Image 1 (cartoon, rainbow, N blue to C red):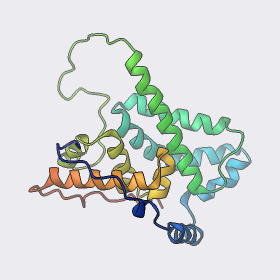
Image 2 (spheres, rainbow, N blue to C red):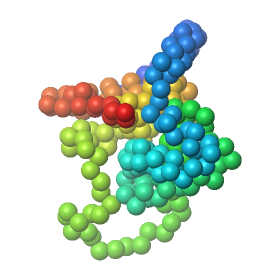
Image 3 (cartoon, rainbow, N blue to C red):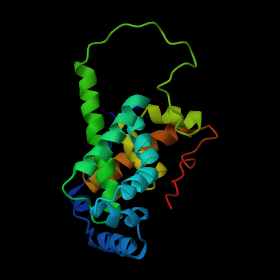
Image 4 (cartoon, one colour):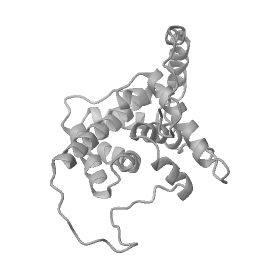
Length: 220
């Protein structure tokens, strides 16, 4: 059963699993070669440990990483900490990725692992009762810039579905790179995206908010 109580899609048949992905890999390689990544410009500076390159990378990626972390944690301060940790790990790394695309995936992956650690710490952390926060005073809340109806539909998805749809529709990242970031297979990304999008269409049916308001961000 899926989140909506309907039957879960059957697993891919052997015929589906054996699809030849070589042409798609060649196409992606050609696109990557023909279209330089926005982060390619910082690679030489990072390789030579130039501080200005780290500052430039932070300007290019901090907001995107924060939105990704917040999508998983729903806590502004923890999301900020996760982003800072990713840049700290990059500064301490023995070597940096040699391509912008790989660097982008490395940063998102680092944030994801930090978010997982934070989530586990929440489970072990004792809950301390506190006074209710007045409406409108939630400092940890963050406006993701999406329509409230769309945001509400997203909140009903599984954690993995939210992350996949965020990376695909908000960040405009392709399935192969999403798989690398989330540590799953590309087929799993496609299946998760399909189920999440189907669930979104069900939730948004009859509203003025089809799935189309998801617009990939132009990252230059």
